[in-house]
Length: 432
Image 1 (spheres, one colour):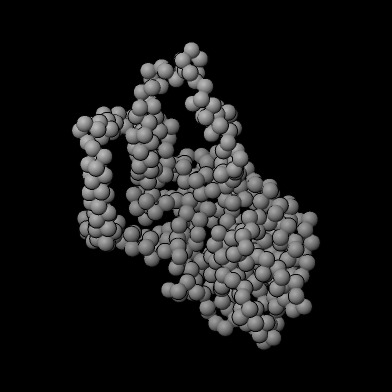
Image 2: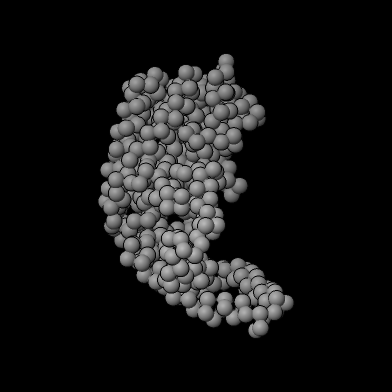
């Protein structure tokens, strides 16, 4: 049962769930029945396995920070050779801490229970105070580090900080609002007040344009608003919200209910969502940023596939919308997934390019989405990548600004830059 769990379970296995009983019950059975004279007892009594068992707790404590710091320092890349090296390091440190920390504290002759609790309390207090001090003085440490860097690095850090992923959007205010005028605004929820406001704008200007989707649609609202001065453009966008995995807190159900009323308020819905959620990793796991970040900048991303289930569910929702308002699905942008650490290490003039295989993966996704949308009435598909015609490294950054606030979102500079590439008829729905 344990071996089955090791090889059969993956990221798609629900947990916690009844599946967890397999390794748990398997372990219980070994504890109950691995008695002297049995094969299991003979195997588990081998000195190498007993040794691993003795240092297992120390090994458990050491491996996490070792691997975490390595990934953080190396752009979240962990080659197999490095993993083997880190395993050896973890074993060495685990043995040392077991021999000189764990064993002495287990010796009741040397340390009583009261002594152990007292020492633990003192150490805990020291860690709490020192951790708080570091947190309070973080800006000082950061300034100290910056003061010892070159002017190019300081300038680069300033550029990257200005492109804050939370605030670097066209028209974004400090309170995260995007209100460009009474009828040009972006919100996360479609509440009663917003519905009333939309209907009032429709009375003045006629049916408006709705930008709908996740955090990538927040970018799209900025891209559209920076290009067009149409008086009635509304965004209803919310990060972590996509139609294929709906949540009650998301906006999709309320939007569908609103546009299905007697007066939908909108004449055109433009939808966008992050592309990696519509992909599958080479091992079949659901798409995530890790599919790209685990690879070096020059390393092939591998055979990424289309998540047909997520694509189908997304289109199903858009078809429901399209029964009431024409819908344009703006295809996912190519996501460079280049970290800030990589930028700081290499500099603004470095020729940043896409990882091998990344453009092809988004090309396959574009082709699949265009195909399935072609048969949907009142829904059209427009490839964002065809429209933007990205050129690397020019469309990534320069030494004056960055066009990406992180690995897959536009910065405000990017929204303005790419907004100028939108065709003049972008806001108009035309059948394919």
